[in-house]
Length: 233
Ligand code: CTP
Ligand code: MG
Image (cartoon, rainbow, N blue to C red; front, side, top):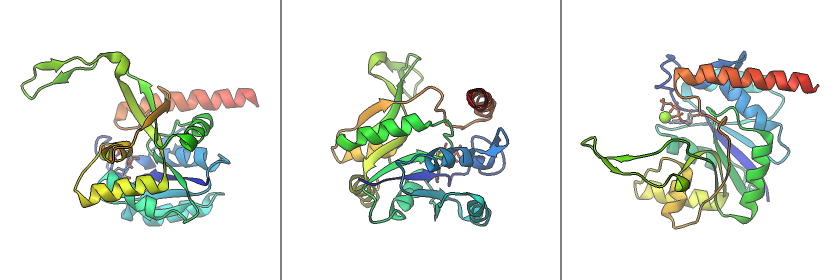
């Protein structure tokens, strides 16, 4: 088993409204994507890191990679996240058997969570990190009328990383492309092939930096973690 990671950073960050790709924004004086990449780079269970980026970010990213102590493979993304992931999967080495797919915009993933998902994908075909939803979720029609209230115990908010055997997730992406299907996450494409997907515990801190208020929350989480680390030293 050789496990690698595809980290997707090729979005534009429209909802952040920063006028540039949000992954370049800093948390505690370091770009968001760098925090994310470092967690995987420091994990001994990860063989290769593919970072999927925008064409316009390429030069800047190349410079950044040269300053990093780890080797990182850069790949250009596509119009949708699904296209970016597919490009990333094709950049992995032939020796790779399993892959973790992760959003660069989720910098709070931990070493321990990576260990857990790698362990789990050894005997489960597809694994997604998830947390139980805290709110009551309602299904609402286009007329604004509530249609249903699913039992909360059955509802999980799904995050990344998501882990798969490489051949399975490549098949799922190929199927989606050939049949013009889109999924809101990679697991959904694997579900379309009829494969079971398991969950592994995530954390409520594993947020995706999406809107400006996430930056404020992100700063607080990062600051607390850095202080904890200092105290332990
Ligand atoms: N992503 C990507 N390629 C795309 C779109 C998104 O690699 N074409 C990446 C983003 O960089 C991010 C992750 O997928 O790390 C999750 O997507 P999201 O949070 O939606 O980021 P953006 O698409 O950049 O933001 P927005 O939807 O607000 O424009
Ligand atoms: Mg998006």
